[in-house]
Length: 135
Image 1 (cartoon, one colour):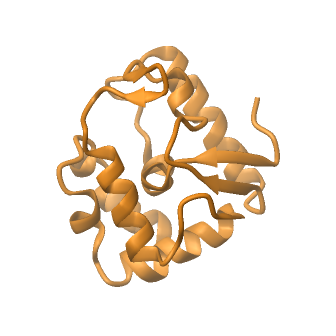
Image 2 (spheres, helix red, strand yellow):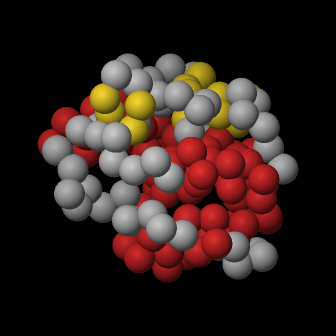
Image 3 (cartoon, rainbow, N blue to C red):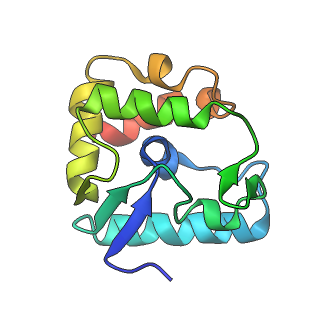
């Protein structure tokens, strides 16, 4: 269950709102849909940027004992997001503030492809990301 404070990996913050459900189990899709609904309804929800398992990893089939087994690259995505947004691992801020950082630092400078290069979902969310954050 999501509370007013959730743990979120920095790169998950980039793609959370344009998740399509393709390629994931029903449990993961249900969990992601719930997280998205909470953040949309309560943008002041506090998030803690984490390097470990977050609320999205909980139901992911790639989560093996607290580590992502899909690729060694997600930590590189996290570092790229933090660097581009001027944030730090372990930092706490509202979802609204995180989105503001993403919009101002990554999207306005057109760095999404640079930050997310190599991600298997990049082609699915690139245009959607720009549309969502530009609203």
